[in-house]
Length: 291
Image (cartoon, rainbow, N blue to C red; front, top):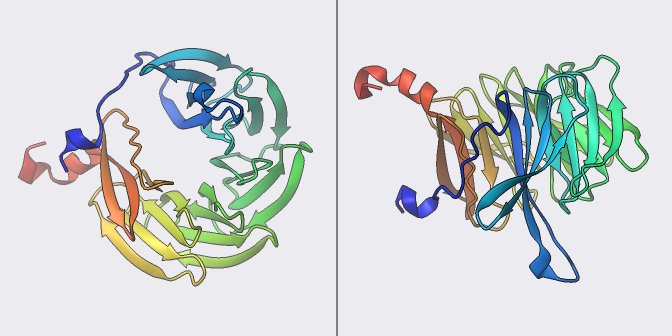
């Protein structure tokens, strides 16, 4: 399959934020009464302290909302499974819950000096989990607007988090290369895996929640069995791997960023999308490839 068969550029929005975009997520809201009224959105968070909501229609991006509330850089945005609620986290140590279509601020949760890093929704959309520099994961109840529980990895900075589609597991990746898997209901640490030799950039569960996909600065993408914690296979890209995700239905959705290379893999009948910075790859092989 050629690169042109995998993706094509639909739209490019110049100066979408005044400063670099740190996080973005694609979502769709479904109208149960009339599926034809379903709408695609893109949510972005930037170093300009803003969250922006864009409508994608007829292959064009139009700004719907500019959400102001954070006083420092937005490091993560996530959208609930039904597509109606946004969670944004910032270096100002706040987590803000927004209504996507109206732009209304639902809740603002102040962490009192503890960094709130990457965030992920529960399958029900009623809870959000976030990582922090302390290595602890915080689970928030966004309906009651309070902290539900703290999950302690007993490790270092939890850079990334994921919640399994089954709702049974929460996973995190740390700056020291460790991956932690919790039983979400019991709040119990199930596995601590020394998965990588450098920081873990992303963790993502397979659609059936039985496998965990990890990506790291050590250049490896690895697949682990969730039940046993054992490594099943690995693939090396010889460069930082910034993100790796399973396709939820076997189709491919590629998000491309400046100076970024996307690679699509097939592992265990699941389609994976892997993000690798071209700059790092060229620096590693400059003598042979003339980059």
